[in-house]
Length: 572
Image (cartoon, rainbow, N blue to C red):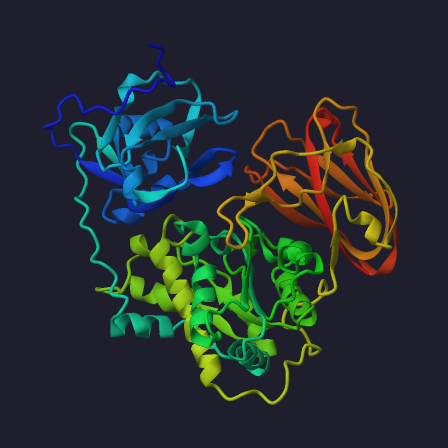
């Protein structure tokens, strides 16, 4: 049998009685075979830069050099004898089935290294593969991903063990006790999330509408945590849906059919992109009028080149827009305790808006002798919460709902015309893509040049209660590799201009240069981030609105490569 990508499991280790030291990558983690396409179900865990922190979070006493080596292909093979995987389906009817497990390595040129594969029964029986049964691909660098392929949609619990070679010792993992969600300690922890109730004028109006049985819409906009990453099932396990249900339980009349739900989370994106997609993803092109908008960008806005101006502009855009909704700030947190709440809270303080901080609730207690919840219980990976973490986030929002209900009603609405805390330059930003450019009088001329194709590999996300994904910016302009390179040209009346484009990890994508009125304003490398997602950048800023000629020119060295323009945002 040909090795390299051959399936060699499940099977028992050669000496099944031999006790080997174990490092865990997953420990009873929830997994979900989400719909990824027609009759395709699965889940992908991207590993680059994440393995070291993941194994260290499960076993803090692990030697740091061992943890670092496990990230790299050479180090991984130096240490690991075999990989053991157990999976048990949550539904009994699927326990006679199996899923396909693959650990993919990468080289400098892409995801083309060794692929360690095996079938894993869904009944809790461990499947084991031995690394020595696979030929090694030359030039490998790091572990790239774990790919789980399911035969249909279902959920389960998975444990992944790295069995180490002879003579390597590591501390034994001691499982954490279950989280006591009904305890006083838990209640005290989530109460610490309530940073500021703020002006209650708008929220009181929403609560009254809900109690009267009037239509109420709660919308959520943010990054991958709002999308639901780490929650299983993603549609109903995420904090957004859980907090929406909490709102209905607390305020809705009857069964709450009049309370509606909009989830607009997109992984890896900051509020800069949120500004350009608010019309499509929250307002749904005018079909949705939100009453509440929960904004979650505190861990994503490191990618906002304006350092908070876009965040403040997005908040104002929402509050001034259709429905004049109540806006709630939600500050999530990464495993390394990082977020940007110290900067972004300035906006909440300025306008006296409600703020809920997950960091304030959970991070201090992580370091207590007996925490309510540990880091390895709260975090699914370096960035995203587990089901337990998403529950905590929802409970923290519910603390705010209760506090807003109990607080006195503010006599007047929020003053949005005061001096901004950071900046509000983009509060009136408008956005357009390929199919709606004709609706924008600001664009008097557009010649797409060779950007006439359709990109079929867009970033896709689960919206609202959908378990399946839908593409972001489906109406776009793509230059396809191999076509004659002709510039994209546009004449637009604007003060500021943003370009939304597709980042990619595919080396078939190349660079472009952006010229405004003949002056180079931005050079863009879509491979800089290294994975497929939407990105927004400012390509022009002016003192006042004027007509400008915009050219997006393929880099001469990359004229034969792909580039996708997703859309534009502009201020007048």
